[in-house]
Amino acid sequence: MERDENGTKVKLTNFKNPEIRYSETPHTLELVEEEKTAQSHLSLHSSIPYSTFGKVMVSAYLDQDENMDLVVGAPGRDDRGCIYIFLDVEETGTGVAEDQANTIICNPGDRGRFGSSLLTLDTNQDQILDIVVGDPYAGAELLEYSGRVYIFSGSLNDNNTLIYHLTDVLDCEEKFANFGSYLFKGDVDKDGTEEILISAPYSGRDGIQRGALYIYSTKLKNYTILEGSRDYERFGSSVALSSEYLVVSSPFYRICWLNDCTYHENDLQSAGAFTVFSLRPNLDPKQITRVQGTMEFGCLGAELDFRTLNIHGRLQEVLVVGESSAASESGDLEQTGRINIYSFNQTGSELVMNNLARMSGESESGRFGQVVSGFGEGLVVSAPYLGNSLYSYGKVYVYDGFTELPAGDISSHCGVYPTPCPGHLASLVLTDYLENSLFGSSLNTFQGKQQTRILIIGSERSNVNGRLSGSIYFYKI
Ligand SMILES: [Ca+2]
Ligand SMILES: [Ca+2]
Ligand SMILES: [Ca+2]
Image (cartoon, rainbow, N blue to C red):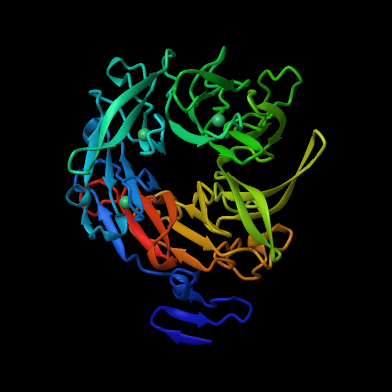
């Protein structure tokens, strides 16, 4: 043990990057993990207040070269929303996003939150990726919030410069549906081309906020709808696709106490659920099972992501499911959040899903598992609200794999206070230490030049260059 002006330092022997620090005034124990942190090598900050730049982002090869490009949503800008396109983003300089962007496209409508969701896909099959942008608040001027999705097709002009034209608009007939809140893509009918999946989580569907997922053919000619069945479940809030399965979440799903599912005080409100569909050639997805949450207000399915992880030294395809408002297993920490890692085993028509492991957040209200991403065999998990109700700073945890994965709650096996300790198995724990910036509200990973892995972290409420203007940070991991 040693003492300094900050208190008494205690060295730990069973911790990878070992140190907790004890302070006498007030009595606190703080986990010090300096060796696991890294500095961003590049950052971009919007200079326009309330832009929430960095709320969503997507990386793709947009122009015809081998340098990765990036599209970032700023849905709050000017009460309309805009998207920013950074070509060859690794070459971009640090600084003001408005100065560094190659192109900024703003909402063709007057009001809304254009850029709340983003996707790249070649809808007209001319070999140039198009940009699909959601505005779930379209209709705001009439207070109807039906939502709308815009398709901007890319083309090269005479100077070989990439330009975008608005070529399609997808509208939703239903008021208050928030169509376009989230966008996904994947080959749902197994014909070799990817469909666009558009969620409308507030869609009623013969009830209230049951939610719907519209599956559009690549050429946008027709669509099918999958929908929620229980009021307020918000089906479609997250989606994951593998080559065999489509998984759709309902994070506000209520577990009913009564058989007819009318309200009862013993209901588990917002426990959440996710529904697994099998993908079939040239047919609509077929529901095969639904997994329900077990914790009231846990919001199982706040995030879904198929990943191939190194577990016990073996590569395995798993479904990572965020349960971002779950309390810790001891019940001590409210809304700390957790992730659940499920394996899939299909025998004939029966699908068995095993909860291989869970990992919980380290702080009350942290929302660990709100956003999940990955790279290769690794996993990245964010907790954007870490802290307390007055002051929070987000953290992002990078895991290279789980060769030591114990069963059950793997974040409670570090044997030190405070538990859970999701940083224990992480190779990197990143934060911006900026108050209430929502560091980790979005994540993006891609393979950069010279085999580097690039992780981009969004802080949609960062105040670096203007109130709630938003920032993104780049790390080599
Ligand atoms: Ca490029
Ligand atoms: Ca195209
Ligand atoms: Ca298809």
